[in-house]
Image (cartoon, rainbow, N blue to C red):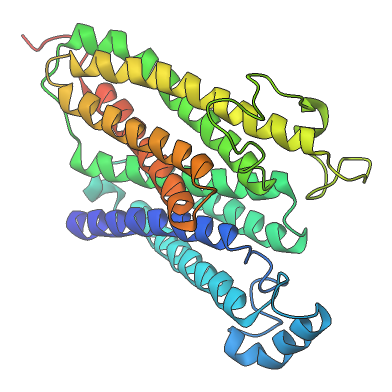
Length: 336
């Protein structure tokens, strides 16, 4: 039973990563409204059964250049199929955690909490479509996907239970710094989601400056209004370019903070006995992520690079989760 449970969790964690990456691809392909209802597509199980409805929608928007097309509908539904499969896997994990709790020797609370997160995530997925890609919902949906991935990784690590041979005193000192590093990365992912959901990735097309200035003209008040429609202010007027610039510029500043803080944490880990592999892995993933972020700006947001930027953000998050778990498993004192 323990082996089967571990396999279920590992498969679900891998699938959660795929769902996050495919979700980013769907968003970047502007396919989020490929099927404007939920959970089906024009009331059908697949775009193949909704061909007539899709054709009418394409004709009404004057061609396939708009949010609806057969290709976009299939992209959107493929993401939903994957997410639905992941939801069923997590339901199975929660049931197994309760039924086999004595054999597993673990509390089923984390698995049950994960199921609650997935239910909320499904609701956010529905609202993403029915509320027409409202930025705050899209960003929360991204964070929900990252939370699902993180909890599954933590659940998987509890089965493997890695305990690095590190100095307990050193590990104890590093724990709060690693926890803060995780918070920094989560905040940066949220800022990145806000950039993506507002389509502000190319609000600054030069680097390292923005519009030739270190601090260009920006409108933070409207850029960070949470309750509003896509491309609109809370009052319903058109969202000014200065607001998009503020969103993009803030993400850049967040990237600098992440580079300095997480880079420092990686250096501290690399210099610690038993923790060096974690530090090396962290600095490697961080370097790749920063490089992809710069490449997005310089190259004009190529699809492959933009999707990779989302994928490596998830890997960076998972790396911090693994570091925090490993540090939590090191005993506070040396065994006598």
